[in-house]
Every structure is written in structure tokens, then in C-alpha cells.
Image (cartoon, rainbow, N blue to C red; front, side):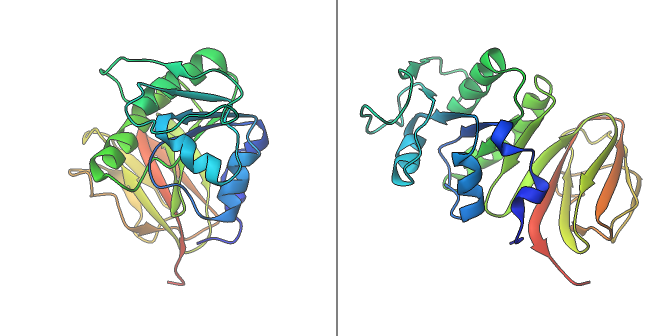
Length: 223
């Protein structure tokens, strides 16, 4: 893991944190970033993880199916019950954030781990969310996901940092030269085709004609 995780994050003191009900982070820097967020929105049962770290949520949102315990003092506002089964709790929390705090960058935590199907669905949702909000990040103890929109994007990296690129559209053309295995109009024929690459400089410049998801692992290799 990197020693300075916030180096890769938006300013979390002016960001909105959404806490999904996956594997809660253990890295102290990530937990600190949650505590420092200007707004914290929690998905149902994830409130128990916040309680264990003495973090008070501003809002708890969900359909109630994973909320095993709820007590006064866990949230600053009443529980928001949305029974709609056509979307998951993360989508409900995200939509609430966009509707009520559209000016804040959104960082999603604890979207991975536990049930693998939930993790895959949450990662795929990131691309959907990015169509509604331009500044959406997903972070775990292991790395950070960002969406690169059509055009040119620049992302901060470290030399040797492990990089994976995902495209839900196999027609997307991706160019990035600052990688151990450079990409030139590369198309991801499969979901795994752009994974397990490595940054060669302190930033990478990605040019794409469609939306893609870039993962920067908190892991650096020497060569």
C-alpha cells in the first residue's frame, strides 16, 4: 500500500462520502478521510461499521433489508427509507447525493469485498454514476477507481504503480504512452484485456473516445 494515499484523492474535506455495505477499510488514512468528509451518506447496514469507528453519519439510506440495528445517535438526520427494489442501496445513496449536494465531489467507500456479485455490480455502476456526476471516485484499502471521460485525462501516479483499465464498450479506443506496455488506439476485446499494466512516470495521460474506468492500485513495483 502507498504511504500517502490522499496524494491520489480529491480534497476529502470538501467531498461527500458514500459508505457502501462491503468490506470496510482498515487503513487509518482512508478511515481518516471518511471522518473528514463534509457529508457522510451511509447505505443501510454499513452504519454498524461506522459505529465501530465512532463515525456519525449525516444520512442513512436504503430499503431496510440489511439494517440489523438502528439507534439514536448513529445519524444526524432521520433514516431515509426507499423501498424501491429496482435499484440497490448504493444507487439510492448516490442519487440522493446528486440531488441534494450536486456541487460536491463524491468518494465511494466499502464497495468491494464480501459478496463478489455486489462488488462487480458496484464497479460497473461507477461508469453509470459518472454520466450523472463528473467527479466520482471509488476507493478501497487496495486502490482507487476513476472514470476517464471521452477526451484526454491526466492521472497522478508513481513510477511502478500498478494500473488496470476497464472498458464496458469493446469499441472504445484507448491511448496511453506512460505505461510499461503502452496503448495505442487499444480496444479491450474482453473486460480483462486492459488490466495488470504499470505506470512508468509520475502521471499518465489517457486519450479515449469513450468512457473508461481506470484503477490505480496502492502497489508499486520496481520494474
